[in-house]
Length: 438
Image (tube, rainbow, N blue to C red):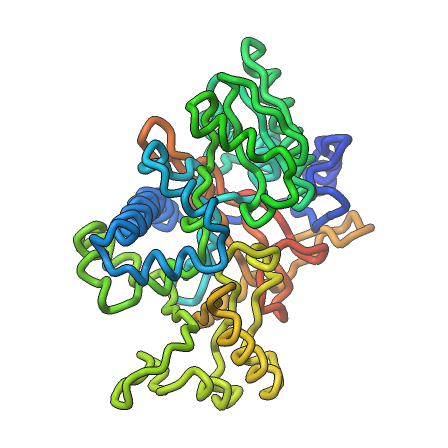
């Protein structure tokens, strides 16, 4: 194994000239994030569990739209979305299509982990692929293998294709260009390329990886051409144009008592019990008045406005934009109840109730991440030091010919004083490796 100073030189030398994230950097580390073999096996199983969950979500929505499940399910999920997009998403030819990349955000806690959300259009694929390659070159057996992430992404566009990125997602363009370059070198018989979504023209037979959010469609002037090509079967687009699948409110629907038997039946008792252990309890901030004898479960309040009166200690809660909004990804639409003055917390709840029909929000139980120590090189220094931090672990699952494969896991380690765990300049970003005990 090379010394730390040699590792730093090797990692720096491996950086693509164009970078991986536009105008963003992070802290480097001499070591991957270690996970034990038992947790690694749990992560392997989680991929199929989440695939089955997403398949059940898709089924519940379509059955609701057809009147075979409660109509309010589809009504919640369609709130704030253009009627033509809703109609397109319900098209028969796309009925069973699901995202082929599944990336949950896992918050590592003292007693396990909690799934903060599931991202169907995730960033970090190229970064994690590069990290796996780079650390593997240092002699480290990374989770997913040296080229696992590349092979996983190749399965999404097996015959080559276009990675279509909008200006809204431009931060991630460099990492996807790096992926395209790597795949073209690996398989010269096919071609992968990155294209701008704003003026993209589809080519029959050339499939598309959609790297843009569906709220961004009004800014993509030629998007109708791609949607028509997909509807005609001339191209295949993944993830599919299904905005209902990209809502965080699925976690709230998972916990609703009227849907309990649906979830138990579709997931099976084993998967249902497992997901109850790792999906945080979540509520929809629906302003509909309750009967006088009813309360909101687990909060034991009769009206959402009473949540505004909770003490700071009682506000171990997150307020989140559910989706279909520029604030719906990253941490931009997330508020931590305990970090806010009471008046601001009340204002946000009132705003959420007032805008529910056009932009639903959810409330979620906050799970505190455990403290870990991990070495890193501070910016501008060649001497590694330890950081006390909290971890968001993002395993990347790829659905390849009907089977779910774990191809890598990106660990984001942020300083311990942070509550929202996401990529930032002061965060360590590393691949994961299984502890061997040696």
